Image (cartoon, rainbow, N blue to C red; front, side, top):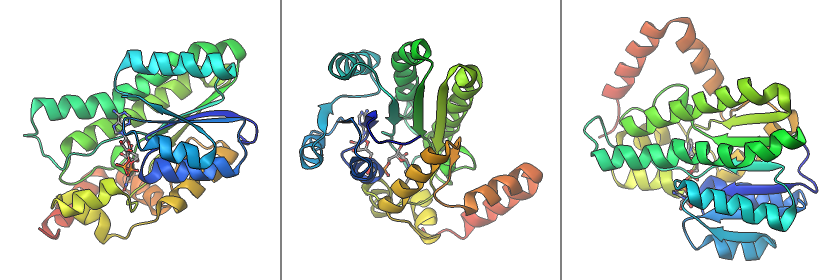
Length: 259
Ligand SMILES: NC(=O)c1ccc[n+]([C@@H]2O[C@H](COP(=O)([O-])OP(=O)(O)OC[C@H]3O[C@@H](n4cnc5c(N)ncnc54)[C@H](O)[C@@H]3O)[C@@H](O)[C@H]2O)c1
């Protein structure tokens, strides 16, 4: 997909990977760029890029419905919806029920709400693109963060399901699965002593701009899996070939983690 002239909606655009994607998308001269976040700071980034800023909690179905209706009434249709907002917890199995629910609502249901809102229009036109940000944690796991790992697996599963179900009707899907990216989410996890964030950071971080560049390349090639860290493909294949060996390796890695 070429982004030139397209109408694009991007969530989680006030920070990190989303903000870098917003800047990179703006360089591609989209017809319209709508930047969404729960953080009002998104308005400043939108202004800087000549885009439209919208404040919404994307974990709430009605809010996403309204957002999509507003974009449709302003721009006719949506070519590309990037569901990128996400949260991490650093918590294990004993995360509170509220933490499990909030993580599920943001990391999974936001993708569901987006797809439910945009798919009817895309199917009617026989064209449209969904880019869902999951994580390498959705293909492998994130040591230390149970709600994050579980919800990111669900996010990958949902993207696969949408691609299988609607791929022959003109709907394209990509699933962005980065490993460590230097963003407030990751650095905040390191500061808070989260095991997974420490381990990921120890393996080396890429910059949000490198992640955004991988997104542009992945969209251009219309690849389902966008892996800004190519080594993730090797880990996934290793896991698929011998999951018991992979689990033993992950347990060993856990014991070596800085605490
Ligand atoms: N940073 C990494 O290493 C990394 C790795 C893999 C995947 N990811 C994923 O990339 C995405 C972006 O993460 P990031 O690292 O840029 O984090 P970030 O915290 O810098 O940015 C996330 C943005 O999402 C917004 N957001 C959170 N909940 C929201 C909600 N309910 N409604 C609207 N906006 C909401 C936040 O306000 C923030 O601006 C997330 O889905 C994250 O899980 C990040």
